[in-house]
Length: 119
Image 1 (tube, rainbow, N blue to C red):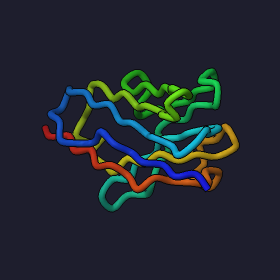
Image 2: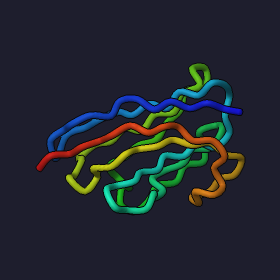
Image 3: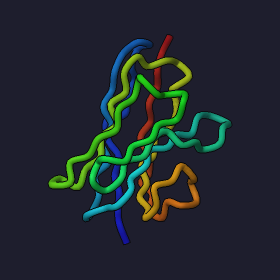
């Protein structure tokens, strides 16, 4: 069992930045970030492999979001720049064993942190 806790969400104006953190209870393999907006399905945002070398982003955030990890701190970060109102959602981190964009490949999930971007 791995426990994950997200933090760093909040209210920000369009064009602003936020850094989300995902703290794990122990070492992790692949860690992904996902988000779910009001009335929408949960969607993939980014993943990072265990060494930090394997990274993938959804097209909707490519060039604006950056995923990174500090294994010494069991923490994965999501730096979000140039935020848009459509980025408003609950953001979740999750961990799994595969380099995957599919929600079903992630075994353990955090409770989420809310990001609201005002126009």
